[in-house]
Length: 106
Image 1 (cartoon, rainbow, N blue to C red):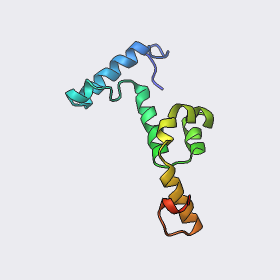
Image 2 (cartoon, helix red, strand yellow):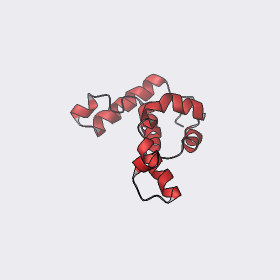
Image 3 (cartoon, rainbow, N blue to C red):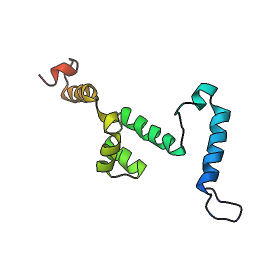
């Protein structure tokens, strides 16, 4: 995406140095000293995690992220855990049930 003055790829050390300066400028001192967006990759991870937490189907998230579904599930399994009630509510809605998620699996 970005090129050096000679047209080549930027050195990782250059990217990390600029990233560090950007974090320092954009974050509070407490945030800066935390792990928040410590690496540029952390933004990608947060984005994919947000898509999954929002209920975007794994197949769609995998396509957008350039992963296979298997790799997506392996890396982001903890984001997917705990979504059973939401899934049951969706099933209940499709089935026309008025009751909350507990009814779907009775």
